[in-house]
Image 1 (cartoon, chains in turn red, orange):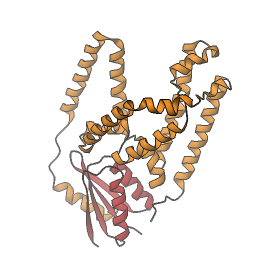
Image 2 (tube, chains in turn yellow, purple):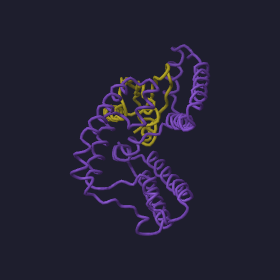
Image 3 (cartoon, chains in turn cyan, green):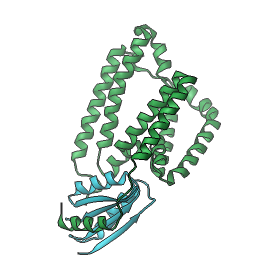
Image 4 (cartoon, chains in turn yellow, brown):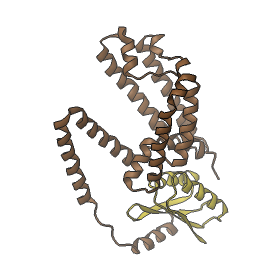
Length: 75
Length: 230
């Protein structure tokens, strides 16, 4: 199980989503992706999309206005 | 929820200090907002009303993450239409609301011209399409439309300050050659106001039916697989 980090700080919508999409395609099933973002739309946008694709996802706010989204590839 | 993510969350949570409470800041902001309201009340009632409406719109936009650019971008990009549906619902509500306000103010269907001026009905033509393409391209690059970037600027998203200056420049350039567009396209284009052809109640009901149809279309599209599926 590999762990990947994706730096999406200072990126506006929809760049974090596109980056996550690209990265997830390269990953294997069971791999983890940590996406760092400071764009509050991403925690809705990315999380909704990942859920719709059927992967496991959750996020935490690590400091004011900065989040980490955890994605586990499922298929 | 999967175990791996749960573990990762716990691990990361332990690494950060508990965040400071933002309640005092909020209190100060509320006091300031009320003070400005009281001050502007002495100058004019209009200004104070606009101040309160502006704050309410801002809070709603921020809390709901309502975003006009995302509403038109997400259906194409990720196949999600939840924001588009929200906009259609808002249009249905405002259609009914504005007709009610204008109808009661005009005192009958005879003064359609008055409603036309109140409702700001403008000529439609190629210039509408050109403007829409420019605006659409701009808002996707900037990461938000006019209301969205103001809201994110307030959140402290620094990129939006660049967008703010670009927005100002764009507005100035637009005003500068508005005369050209007016001469070439706008003044030659027809002003279409549907209640001119059918009665106002029918136009309203028709618009609501079309919007409802679009709503269900968007709902159906949302349930289909998205373009960016894997």
